Length: 201
Image (cartoon, rainbow, N blue to C red; front, side, top):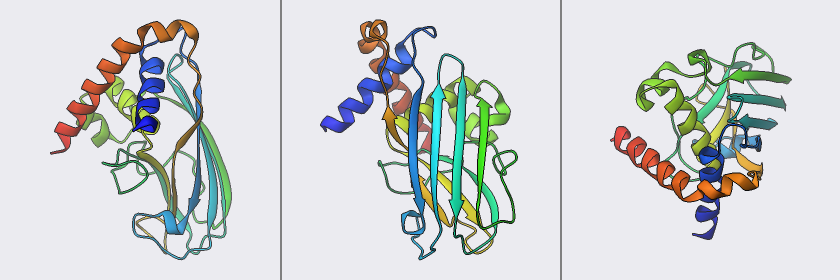
């Protein structure tokens, strides 16, 4: 319970802060086969870092991976699972894959800065489910804070995903001025999450 409250506090301060005061937040994920929704014994591993900046409406994605059994086909971030660090969810980011993600390889690296105010950065179905681009951005970022978004690499051998890992915040320090809006931001985030859950039923 304490962890959940801490996540909501960070997220509320982050989203409630004026654009000029919001701080970038870094998330990391360790990718492997046993962490897939349907676990597998792939020897493949990977490491992903995602840095979100609400003020600039950007998401900086970097990943390295190696040892895959199959050849890469697609990769993206999925959001949002019903429970933290478990389950499966639909694709939230661009489809069919991250633009420029290396295809047909068993090892590689990738880096891309996304404009999260651009509809092309999302799965169209995710935008529809959230009722707009700005809402999709808020939902994705909130899902990352709630440990319910994961990075997935799909391959020819494992079409459903060969290696994945849930994203976890490693730096979330709102500017002092944003803390004054904590109550308002928390209320707004709670309402947003309630509406999102309702849309899934």
